[in-house]
Structure formats: structure tokens, C-alpha cells
Image (cartoon, rainbow, N blue to C red; front, side, top):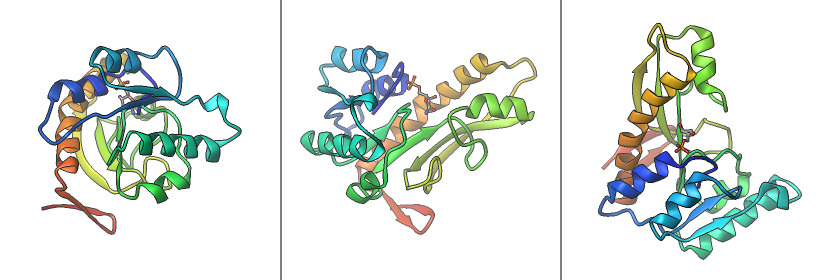
Length: 191
Ligand code: GRF
């Protein structure tokens, strides 16, 4: 599921790991790079517009129904900029993954990179986690650190963060798809 340029989707497509079959791409808006990347890879797409629904609950129901139509076993959020309602977590418990451009729990939210720079942090990074009912909060599956350099701006830092994302996310999605991740409380254990 994506809202933007879809470079993480592209990394997942290109990784072509053995147990991952990308059965569909859902976007919340038309004309985004992620949809073009999916179409180029002949992956079916669906657009479920936020504006077409009268609130988070009906938007979430539409997303969950689309996931069922795709017969997907998991949901991978890759730059999906909408918050899903509780129904998604009920219907797909521990089956929704997200990638976030900071070392959670530091700098949650939509401006993680700008906030890390503004805070004067020396180290930030990437977190892949299971999605729960709170934003950028669920059990952490994997993290990679990225140093913040003295001359960094949002763009240069995002570029280096994305280099890590494009390696890490395909690895984690493969682990998930292979059934190697167990959630015990807040801890994710590997088989
Ligand atoms: C990524 O940097 C991810 O951390 C954040 O949104 C961005 C999506 O980028 N959640 P892309 O659309 O995959 O290029």
C-alpha cells in the first residue's frame, strides 16, 4: 500500500524474494509513482480514495475488503500516508507491516526526518514494525541506524535513509512471508 513515489515498492519488486508474491498494490490517490511502478511490473492495482469515504472507518473497511479480494496474506505499507482504523488491525492481526524513517520510538509521525534534523540528533535511521492501533508504535521487527552528517538537509538525509530502506524492507518482508516472525508481547522473535 502506497501513496507516493513507490521506491520501496520498487525495491520489493526488484528483490523478487522466493516467498513474496506481490498480489496487488493499493493507493489512496491516483497518479502516484507507486501505481506506475506496479503497472510496469504487471501487478494489479486499486485506488481507494480517502475523499470518497465519509471517515476513517468506511475508508478502512474499503481497504480491508480490497485486501481480501486480492486474497493477500499480509499488508505492506510502503509510504502509505493514511492511518488505518482499528478494523484493519482486527481483520489482519500482526499481518500489517510499516516502514518508518527514524529509529522508533524517536520521531514518530509524518515529519520524522525534518524533526530529527530540527532536534539536532546525530543518529537516526529506519524502523520496520508491525502496525497496531497507535501510529508508528507496534512491535519493532528490524532497525538500521543512519548517521546525521553536519551538512545534511532533509533531502540528503532522506536519500541515505532510503538506501537502507531499500535493502531492509525486502529482507523483512521475506522473513514475514516465510513465517519466521513471531510476536510475543512487544517483542518480535525469529524462528
Ligand atoms: C519512505 O521513506 C518511508 O520510510 C516513509 O515513506 C517513504 C516512502 O517512500 N514511510 P517511497 O514512496 O517508497 O519512495
